[in-house]
Length: 117
Length: 110
Image (cartoon, rainbow over all chains, first blue to last red):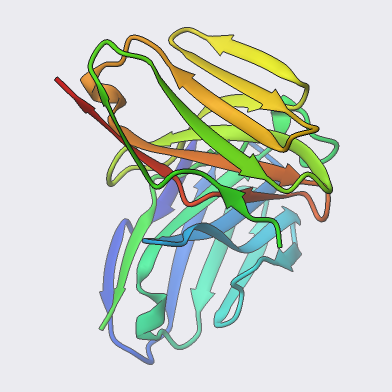
């Protein structure tokens, strides 16, 4: 299994509070991703990183920010949590992206279940 | 958009064979992945196809036709533990992002 951990694994918070989720990898992979998974929508990309301090938006980035100060850590921040951000959040890593090779395979962390009341 | 279409649910019998289909938009296609996800767990990688044809890995095989924008995952000798959601994901060369289908929930019954 790829060495990916996420913290916390579960969190309940209130609307309007800031929340930070952490993804930590021990694989030294260059690319890291944050997804959310909701019933009826599947996995959707929030933000991704292609190196230290290099990040870009995914398809559902509104209300989220990210930071990557070290290769091994990728942080996802909800500046002011809303009930619509209640979801399961997955971090993923990959060695490469294009052109497509098997090293583009993304490996997922265990997930964080976030509930915003 | 880059819609990835797969059936929402399927049911099959233990010991049987099941085929889960996935169709996708071909423009910009650069590879297709299948993942398995058990309830409450993370997706785990099953297979990868970039060229036309069949890739076999034990009881699981994945097929790709790039010209038709079509793939399937074939599961043989079904076991109860194969009950899970199966996610089709396509790698498009615009920005190097994976686009996921909504997943097919497979129930294996005795």
